[in-house]
Length: 262
Image (spheres, rainbow, N blue to C red):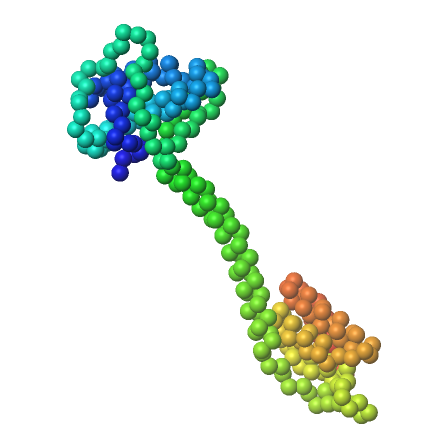
């Protein structure tokens, strides 16, 4: 495929007024001469000059690219070959050929330069789409870079929560049996005794602390002893999360006292 889209039915040699064997220097010289006559800066508001300038740009781009020029020479079909640049007795440029197709060519103006007039170049729409895709790929990469760690952390949290919820609790001690006169609730002492058995002689563990805290919340009541036991459960979770062995041991000792074992 040619690098620059072109219309094979348009004679770009005639547009620039050069022969089919014109060199790079001849093509550039012819382009500069015609650009001075049809430049939009010198023909303000002239749609004909703008159209002619666009055609000149396409012609220069096609003929200065060796591969594109070779393909154009094969596709444009048999026609009269120009062996010399067209000459005119007047200062006007040769008549403009039919305008090329504009659905595949975009004219972009270069940034303003203080030392020269604004310049412009012809680029294909395929190049524009490639630039947009590159910008989209960068944006997608940044989004993935932010989203992937968040998704991984959320998945780990859900996995740990499921483990805690499905792990069976240790059997309660005999002291956790319902106290006399209470037919539906265990005593605070019995809950403290069961919690002490779960953490006694165990190393600091966040998973163990969460299980004990859930057990205490499920079996505590509104008594002052239960309030202390709930506070011990929270201290166990906090000390395990921070790796505070001293607080962990002190909390286990207090649970032991509530269970009347110490």
